[in-house]
Figure 1: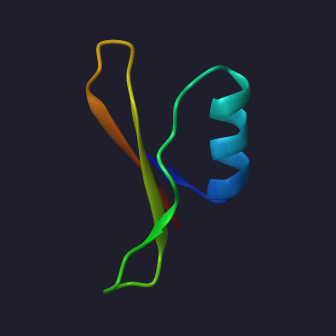
Figure 2 (figure 1 turned 90 degrees about the horizontal axis):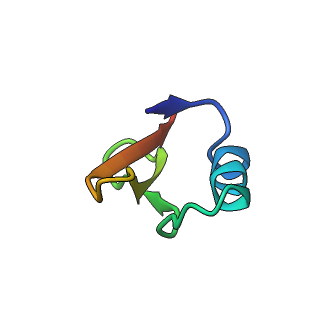
Length: 49
């Protein structure tokens, strides 16, 4: 998923009880990203644009 504000998106997911990994920085682009899981346990990526 692409988001404008990763911190706001992470905070929203956490407020809904979703476990979100720490925010990381892509060493090639400098963009911030993180991962979380869908209800079936499949990993999903959230990437700040």
